[in-house]
Image (cartoon, rainbow, N blue to C red; front, side, top):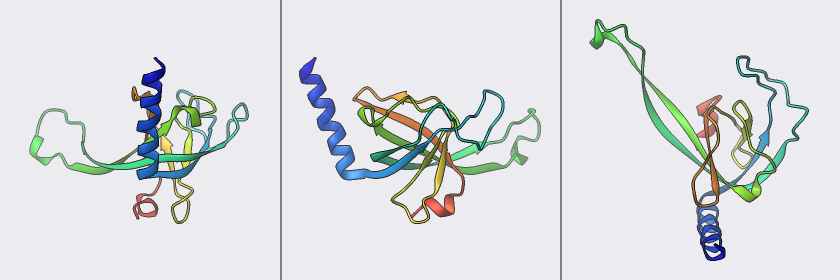
Length: 138
């Protein structure tokens, strides 16, 4: 088990060295059915020294009732995946929490939209959406 942990640390070191940037986790008090812009007083914000931020273009199909299929527009969007070393997390992030991309001009913010997922090599993947993509893409 110790050898595998060493390999996980080596993989995380390589990811952080190549792609790492500083981000800040800002917890929000979103409920299950209500989105809130207010901070969560039970969890404190903290800085994550290195996280890998990746942008994946997505093609979103609108819902269709089954007729006039060719007339349904596709919407292009952007998903933001943030990979964080587990040891950097002071607590488990939640849906609705915000990540501030501190190293980017203007410090844009993304919102976590899915439950965090462990990647199996000592990191957690946070799937997010951007509040304003023009501020994020370098």
